[in-house]
Length: 94
Image (cartoon, rainbow, N blue to C red):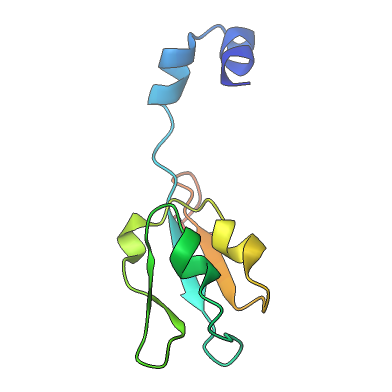
């Protein structure tokens, strides 16, 4: 898809990629909803989460988050939200 967008705008795919920043996110775990299933800890592609002392997920490495939303979509308890960073938005966070 990137190539078709780049071609439509007259840019090469490589040029189009240079204008985009790295996707970033700010995950948050609501501990009162988390049931310690461990899905986010086990499957986060960037290893953002680690278990806290009670076995619940905790955001241990927020700087690694790429806002892929895997955790948010797969949490059976809906205990995770991810704020997305947009370089174009005022303040950056959406």
